[in-house]
Each structure stands twice: as structure tokens, then as C-alpha cells.
Length: 238
Length: 119
Image (cartoon, rainbow over all chains, first blue to last red; front, side, top):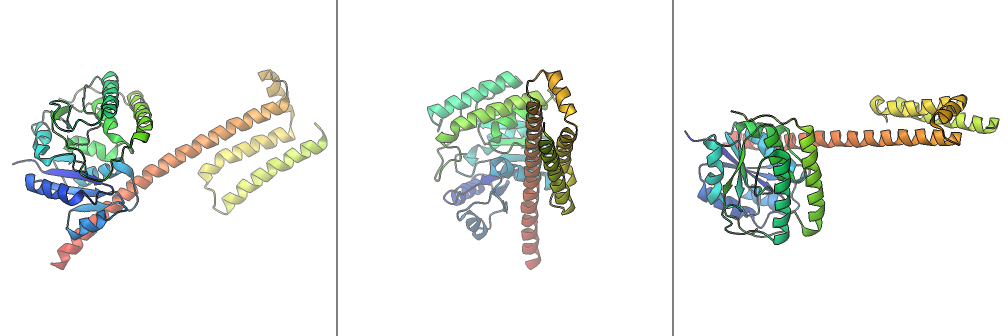
């Protein structure tokens, strides 16, 4: 029997991408369930979700990406899914690689597997400045937790039941991806990466804009250090 | 310190305490958040009634002007109150987040149930 997989798709104003993203997911992975978390979008996202009968929850107020993804994790816990996969709603993540990301988790090799675009270095590699930022955070996480992860901001990631339940209760609010790696590692979960190829987003604008990047770097760095101080490092789990 | 000044300080401290108690009575302010304000008002009242305490603290800290002792204490209280407000906001936003998520999850379940009962 194969694992019950839930794909969590956070969505904030993705009217241009929703249909393509979900149809592509349904085509490539017909046997997984998905849940779109509409984070109080102000565009026609809700209408599109309802008209197409897509499985979704709608947050009555905007919580940001962290609160949105966490809603998905809570849904996965309530409905007894074995693996929860976060996949962005902007079309950057190709569902063809879904099983590459869930595989190590399903086989019990990892508690969290992150789809990384920097292992094979194929496909969309993002801008130089952003790669620099990702590298800095990667080194910082390595220093603080001893875990080397290349694509720390990748939002394409699978978690097993145990870690999903943990994230359902503890998840950072604003830019949660690097922090999630940190807190998972420090709490003794096994984190690793699988190579994937990413695309440039299909339409709309990314939620991380260049003007906000400096603020993002400072905030995440501080959050990581605080994380390191506040969580007592635990040994590996089995 | 002249008698008029002292009377003014006592009245001021009493006004602050009275205002806090009035807010409490009206249920506009919850007891939890009023404690630090009541403490602040009480200390000010004690200082106003017995300025002797202020002089003692001034001598211990080696400060020149007694009023600086009062200002220093007020600064301390203000910082405490501001931090406690930040804590309150953080706790509220966490609770608000959990509730928002629960509402969304419940709404989805209702929608599913409604679709089922229609069949």
C-alpha cells in the first residue's frame, strides 16, 4: 500500500496560475490529494477555486505564507495523511518531481525532504543576488545546526506524519522555509534534499520583492539565531 | 519641595490610580493588564506622600537631583509596560492565527458536508 499524500498549495492572488498548476498536478500525479490554502486573496482566486470545484480552504483573514502552510499541515493531521508536501501555487514547482521529493520520506530515509534546484543545477537558478542570499542562509544554518542544506528557501518540501504534526503546532509566520529546516533539525528530525528542476514563475509577482530582501535576510538571520538559542538540540531519532 | 508642589504630586498620583480603578470598574481594562499600572500609580503616590524615600534612593544611587530618581523609575515602568504590551500582542496574534486556521478548516468541512447531503 502506498502512502497517503497531501499536496499543500499556498495561494495568495494566484488567479493567473491556479488552473494550470492544479491541472498539471492532477495530470502528473492523479493518485495524490491536494489542498489549496487561499490566504484571503483579493483577486479572483476564490471564484476560480469554487467554479472548478478545487479542494480548498479559505482563510477569513490574511495570515501570510507561514500561517497558510500551517493550515495545510493541520488539515493533513486532521485527515490522517502520511506525507504532506508543500508546493508553491505559482507554477515554479513541477509536479513531475513530486515523487523525487516524497520518495526519501516514504522510504523512511528522511523526515523532511526538500526539493533542491542547486544539486544538479538544472533549470531556473534564480538571480545572482538571490542565490547569494540563499547561500548566506545556507551557511548560517550549517554553522548553527550542523546541517548542510543547499536550497534553504525552497518551498517544495515533503514531511512525514511526525514532522507534519510538529509543524501543525510550531511554524514560523512570515518567511518560514529556512526556520523550518532549523527547528526540524534541532528537534532531531532528519532533513535532506532531493534534486529537482524549477521553473520561473508562470505569472503574477513573487511575494519576496527585491526591496524587501535586506529586511528578509536580517529577519531570518535573527530568527535562526534565536531558534538556536531557544531550542535544546536533541539527538537523531533512530 | 514646597507644600503646593507636594499636593500637586499627590493629586496627580491619585488621579492616575483613580483613572485605572475607574477603567477596571467599567471593565474597559482587564485586571491582568492593570496590575503594572496600579503598581506604578502606588509607587508614585508613596513618593508624593513621603518624598523621604526619593531622597534615600537618590543618595544610594549617588544622583544629584531627586526628581531624576522619579524620572528614572517612570522610564523603567514605561519600558516594562511597553514590553508587556508587545508580549500581549504576540500572544494575541498567535491565538488569532490558530482561530483563523480553525475557522477555515471548519468552513471546508461544512462545505464538504453540504455537498454530501445534497446528493
